[in-house]
Image (cartoon, rainbow, N blue to C red; front, top):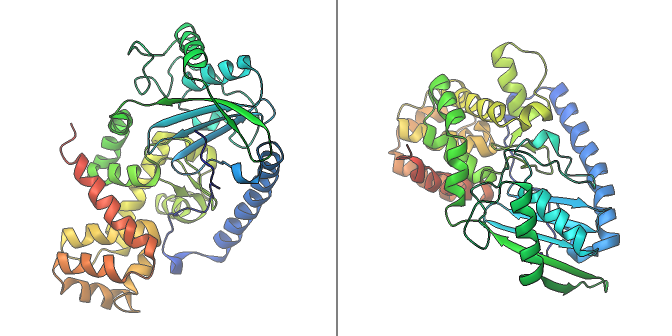
Length: 356
């Protein structure tokens, strides 16, 4: 069922060290954010008019939300919970069409405009292949099988809801298979392993960050312009990586919506944290904890917990046992969100240490 909540786009970001950001990057970042404010404001107004203020649903890090039929039909994929909800205020034919296009949409995020009302293209390599099974426990990967499954859902699984504005929505819910997160992780293993070798970053750490940031949602977006699987902000971490490579400017959104590029940029940024901003931390376990916290809130925020001087801060960290350092980050980091992030990534990483 469509959740009766307001999904804010204000979510965790990937920031480079604040003391490294230049004025130009800050101005560009502000322009990007203001532009997105205008776009999402217009977009949200359309939703409010048709669905009501209490039914605002928009895309976020772990939620794919797409409106079609002039905003009267809506698809919501919760990648974290593994649940697909598709509803319409229109006809059964419109609902059927939305189900088919959702089941057969591709994984190319740059080809889908989440802030416009229109059908997503059908792909011969569906994103949801293997993640959704029909009533007979079989794959849904062709137009024929998708249409048959859609008709079954409308006939036997249709639900109805009256919105606060008095409009009626007819919808279906489609659960993903139990191991949907692991299956999505498997899809990105080749790119993760390539990046792991290239930047000497543990592949389990890359996967743990991907799960925490987006739950392997290739369409992941945030209010402040974090993009894709590893939630890269183009004018902070993205620009930092480009500078390290000797490239001008920052990666475009289209570039970052490419899964391979996103994983490569995110992994490269982890290597910058490891070998530049946090290079003097000696213990590998402590350095890993610092990398995780820094990926979320910036290395500057982590080091300032110990001293204003980064070199002195790392010397103090080196005097701590890794468990002590972790506990300080977990309990004393100025950002509550960053403290939760450290725990989530550390837990998620453990699930991928034996992934083959």
